[in-house]
Image (cartoon, rainbow, N blue to C red):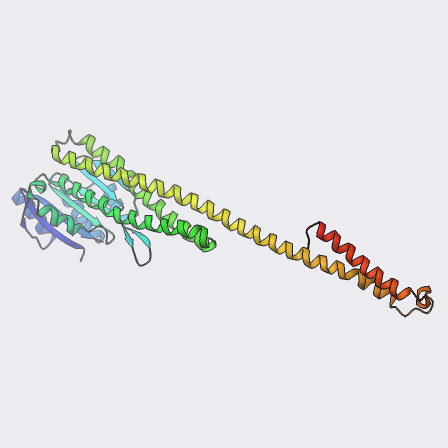
Length: 332
């Protein structure tokens, strides 16, 4: 169902469980509460219904409909539009899966639009409902909890990628090759995507902290945002380090592959030298024997008693001379 969860809150407590968006709007106005609407891959009509009720800016609505947005934070009057790129690590395939989350934050509402399984916003809602004092601080508190959840979900991804990098480093000098190069390249692409997802978080959280006094955000909530900011900075530093390590690993692997190819070529060259050397040694006796053994009628050496020993001696001398030359040049 597109509507994952839908509630109206007053003073941090859930007072209504509307069965439709229309009921949510009515209860929110009647109770002067806060609406928290969670949508999962909604239709354009459902997004349009929410946009009309809460007067969402058309550009933000267009981004929510289009999807495939970068992480960002934009303000339209008293409404915040936040795009987050959560991620999760898939152990079975050793890959990173990226999602997309759009959040609209207004004075008396918060709307989340998920386009993937991650993050687990039901966990955020349970946490907030168990902390009514925090939830009573309003939509900004819910936004903080969502940011905190997204950043926390990056940690297993960081651990998984770090594990993959350790395996690559172990394999680098054992069985480096084209297959390992492909694995390094694929992991590098994932790290780059992760870096693009987390890098904007620093500016986004910094902007929220700078605007907190203006919008009278609770002091404790500001401190909580600073904590999330610190965690985000650590993850950003980690991803930058991963990218550098993988770049170096790709260079080292390419060097190892080239060296192995060079070593193989040298070994093959040595074999060719040996084969060529022995072929040349055998060529001398063959040449002498061929000429001497030809069926000539007039040839002085044919009736010479020493002709045959001389031919054998010439063969041996030629072979030994070539053998000595090739040994001196380290061909044999």
